[in-house]
Amino acid sequence: MTDLPPDLQATRAIEDRLVRLGAERTKLEAKLGENLEAIVDEIPAGAEAGIPFDRIAHLVGISRQTLYRWQNALAKLRDG
Image (tube, rainbow, N blue to C red; front, top):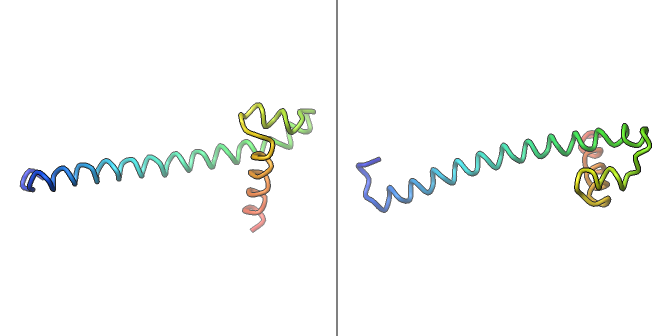
């Protein structure tokens, strides 16, 4: 890389950082998706234990509406 002019070296360094950040974002999104699924999968157990839906949402730090959206979206994905 030292054979490149300084401006191209700088551009390449930025591109390399952006590629690394993009890969990290992709990994984080996958982990977030797994976390979302795990939360939704716990809803029935929580309900069976007498934990209200609102409380479940509060415990995971989201609104009831968001939890409903996650639950509905995941059900649609799983149904095909």
